[in-house]
Length: 339
Figure 1 (cartoon, helix red, strand yellow):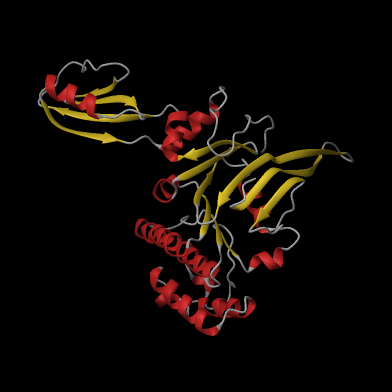
Figure 2 (tube, helix red, strand yellow; figure 1 turned 45 degrees about the vertical axis):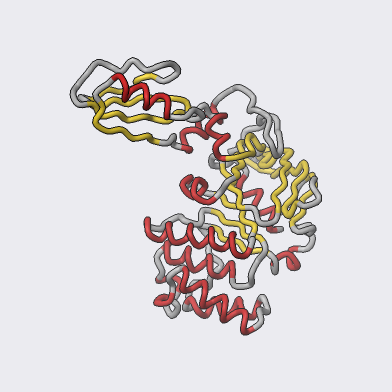
C-alpha cells in the first residue's frame, strides 16, 4: 500500500454462497469467487478506467468500495475509511452513478429529487444552489427539472443521476456505464463535463463502461479485470502492446495494382480496387511505412486507423500467455471462472 493512495485494496476477495436446485428435494451449495486477491491503489485526483467482460467482478468491486458489500477477505480503504464499517460517514465523500439503476425518486419531478438530496446530505443552501445551477447548465437539464423522473428518457435520466451524485461535492465518483443510452451529442457533453470536473476539482473517478470510447477519451490509466483478478494495470497505450494490436494504413493508389510489397512486420490484409489496407504493429510509428509506400507507389491519399480497443482486450483475455508485469499492481492470471 502507498501512503498517498486515496483508494486502496490489498488482497481483497469476495465469495458468494450460491444454492442451486439439483433434484426434487435437493439443493447443492457452492462458493462463487467473484473477486480474487484484488490489489490496487488509486491516487487522489486520478481518473481510472476499470473494464472487463461481463461477470468479471467490476460491479462487485464498486459495491465493496461503496460499502454495499463487505469483502470476504483482504483490506479495503477509501480516504482512510473502511466502507462496509462506516458507510454513512463515507457517503458524504462519494458519489455513485449506476447506469441501470437510478437514485432519483421515480414519481417526483427531477427538481424534487434534488431538493430531497439537499436535505439528506445537509448541503449548505448557498453551496446547493451554486452546484445545482452549474451542473444543470453543463448537462443541459434546465427544461427537464419539472418533469417526473418516470417520463425521462434513459439518456435524460442518466444526466439527472450524474447531477444527483455531484450535488454534495464528493471527493470520489464511481461511474458504472455513465453514457449508456446517450446519443452522440449527449455523450460528448458528459465526457467534456467529466474532464472538466476532474481538472477543476481533482475529483477521483473510477469509471466502468462497455463503451470503450469513454475510456480512450477520459482515462490515462486503465485496469482490466477478468474472472475476479487484475490482469492489466497501466497506460492505455501499453494495453495495445500487451494485446499485440495493429494499426491499419489505408492507401488509395492512382490505379489498381498488385498488393504493395510492405517491409515486415507490415503486411497487406485487404485489396479492393485501387485501395489497399496494410496492418502494422500499433507500437510502431507509421512514418517509415508511409515514406516507403509514397516513394515506391503512385499514391493519391492515405489514412491511419487506430486499433479497436475492445478487440485488443478480447484478444488479451483469450491469450494463454501470462500478462507482462504491471507498473502498478502485478497479478497472476485468473484461476477461477465466474458466471
